[in-house]
Image (cartoon, rainbow, N blue to C red):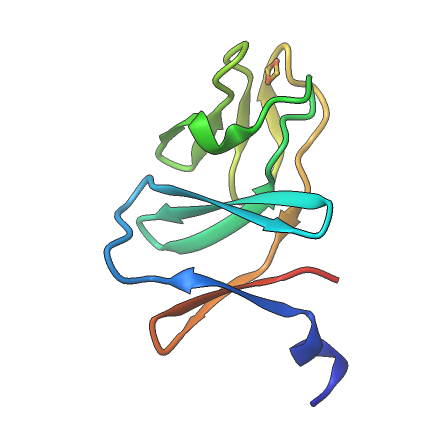
Length: 107
Ligand code: FES
């Protein structure tokens, strides 16, 4: 197994997940959000960059996530902060689906 394989972490089965769903994934002391968009799965850090609020309860609109606390908006694919009060970008992570299983790559 090479290093790249070691960094993929199983999240959950992809069955039953619909567009605009958000999956929370916790690993050690970190937390992430995985989003199902029309063209596939994407992942970002789970905590808003404005304050310590989890984005799992946020609202997905097209390719954007709106924070549930102050309605800051981020682009899910790039992590870019699009709307104040959020001004720092979210980190993004690769996601893949193999045999109906979702994996996130965290290095
Ligand atoms: S906590 Fe997310 S915009 Fe304020």
